Image (cartoon, rainbow, N blue to C red; front, side):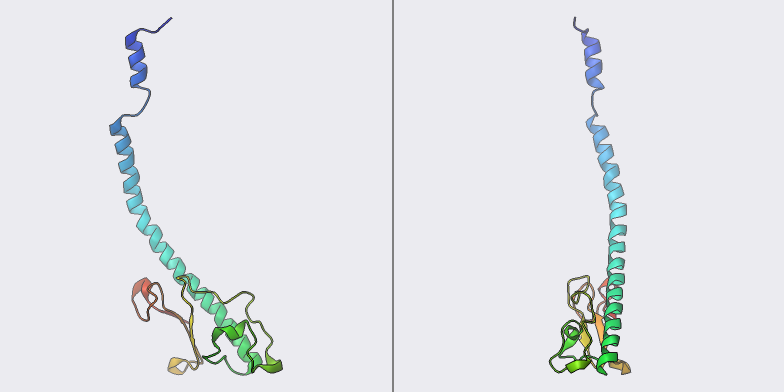
Amino acid sequence: MSLPNHIRTTRLRHAGFTLLELLVVLLIIAMLAGYVGPKLFGELDKAKVKTATGQMKALGDALDRYRLDMGAYPATEQGLDALTAQPADAGQRWQGPYLTRAIPADPWGQPYRYAVPGTGGKDYDLSSTGADGKPGGTGHAADIAW
């Protein structure tokens, strides 16, 4: 037994969404993405800056332990590698490795910059070039120094 035509067409008409309804839903999703997306990426930049600061603090602590054992910070030529591998001239005083893992790159994939003596009377300079990978910069591209 088949259904009359007007019942069959009514069921078909209500079986799916109209093109207009789909476009309205897509417009709402696009508006939400346009509002939420930039806020999420702004938080990502802040998180990278905090990560770089935390990593530099850990490197600074390791440098301080190195100085306690060796009597001085690693030379600029030795760099941060002196924290994980014993320098040739270290002798018995080196009690490392001073880091449990390899020296990390900054959150943007660049190596941290290290120099002894530091500027402005500091013992050493430890910094990251930030998001742009170049010295200087502003905002999230600014250098981060420890």
